[in-house]
Length: 250
Image (tube, rainbow, N blue to C red; front, side, top):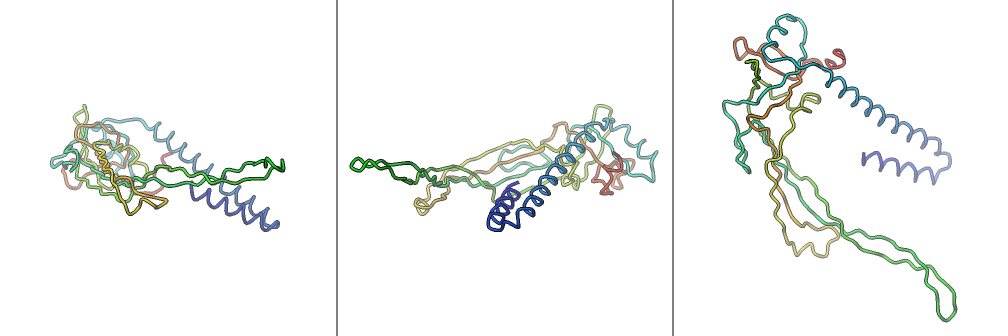
């Protein structure tokens, strides 16, 4: 969004200096607005489509896959996270299957505001325009590093069924929406850096934020179901093998 705003303001300045560019500016602005509206509608359709897919039990999935040997099978299932070799999150000590650590820098930045006013001369009675600068500090934060670890895991449900979850599903543009990581730790360390005291942007602290997908939590998985080659009679939930699978299913 920031990129669109910067591009728009640049076009406006260009149009102001070149009257013939006004039409181009209007067309470009309309194109960007149309693109934004398109992607907003697409996300809404995706959300509605995903929500309308019925949940099936894990014990039903093998029969569904067997009945469609030549087709990609899209399923939506819910189950509890299990792992034979879980990870231990380094900051919180939580047993989990995914741990993401974000490194964040906290800063404060000086902002200058131009304040215009009028000043009246006592002797002459005339007023003149006066411009003053007002300085203020605004705090913010920026991410400067991410570390992520994951391990093999599966889900089980009350029907007695189970399925292995493929790691590549964690990066899927649709499936990954359901893997809501839980914040397990947020450590903040303030700093006092004398070398930045006169700077207009200075560091005031650092923090480590840890997010995990813990054992025992119940998650929804939207994925392609297939026979698991590493387990006899087992099922694997993986990233869809066809990019347009969701469109075709819709």
